[in-house]
Length: 255
Image 1 (tube, helix red, strand yellow):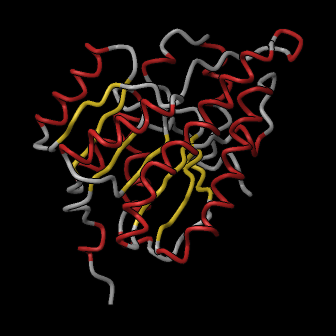
Image 2: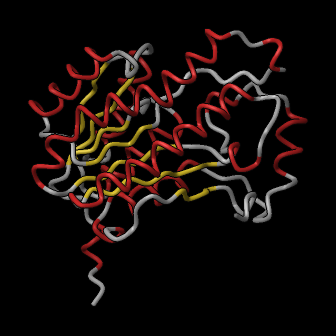
């Protein structure tokens, strides 16, 4: 018999990387409203991070700010230890942090930019997963949720660096899911479409209009669309779902 309480995240601790703004903040708030204690990660903008923390507090969410570079091994170990000391060990890991994503022809990229994409979408998930796994394995329960993108399925161009790195993260997601399934740890991916948030404020209007005209559901996605999906994947309601890539894009991808 289905129990609605299976959606509750009470007594769970969630870390959402890159969660001071945009989709990350929306997912952190959703997890907190479902009962989780939430660690908000940021790297640069302290004022923006403190505003996100204030939103959590206003929603009666127990939350913690953790500043740090998610691509640096020592920083990751420090952050995970700090969260464990103040909120408890991480049960739910949401791998969301991202750098700027300029679209350029391949001739205009250099390897340093490709490396930055790989650092955020391959190295960072590896470091964070490795740091959080001992607790998850010990309790035989955990949730690892990668934030991917529809661009892999759609082959968006000119965008090779970002698309290649996100494709690699998708492979990491699938292989890791098989590896960790025996411990009751699920590993899934959410792949949003273009959901306008703060960093899209200055995007060209013609590009926005063109994308919007293609969405089968005939509306823009909003950050809360990600919030509901991440709570489901973090909860006991999804305990038999792993290695999946769920597109949150109103039907823009059909496979």
